[in-house]
Length: 95
Image (cartoon, rainbow, N blue to C red):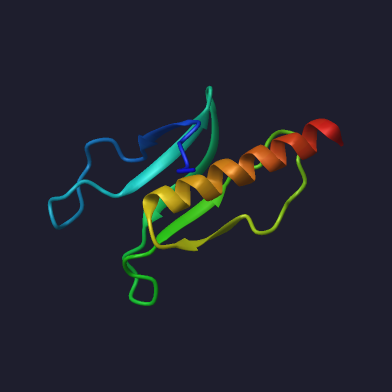
């Protein structure tokens, strides 16, 4: 089964562009109005072309690993954020 995004994703920097004139490949995910994490296309030499993902912690949640990393595609990064967020949220709600 193909993964389908569950939460809303928006450009972090809106219409702002980089020095190449292209929009930044940088997005924030939201569960309702709550920011759940961020993904962006890394441009640094060691990770160039990989997507970085990082989560926010739900209210009451304790830090969890992994909470960030690099993956090949934007869809993989969004999936990592969403799945990690759901696990963290469940953990915070169930103590």
